Amino acid sequence: MNLGIITLCALALAVILSCTTSLNVGLLAIALAWFIGVYLGHMPLREITGGFPVDLFLTLAGVTLLFSQARVNGTLDRVAHLAVRLCRGRVL
Image (cartoon, rainbow, N blue to C red; front, side, top):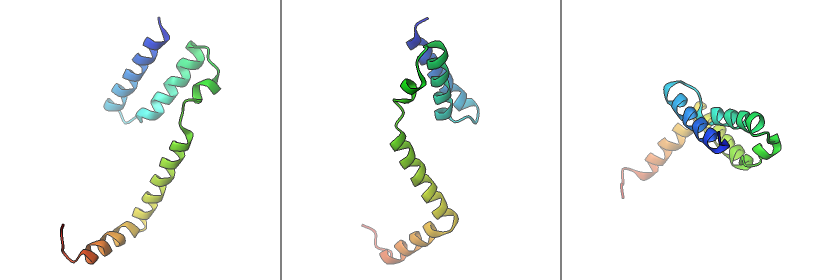
């Protein structure tokens, strides 16, 4: 069987499993890419992970952590209330 068809089936499987279970589709897709690339495609791991955007992932993880911390400690609520007060009911 062609490696491209196997990969496409694995992606469909990841999407279906993420819709029916609580599994994260991204983590499942990365795990399947590793399995297919290393064991079925006989590719080195460096070549498989070479296409993963590490910089974008770190930026998104950092921003998510920042805003979750700001929500937990109440900073986002304070900023929202201050912004509504500054508007004084004016809507554009």
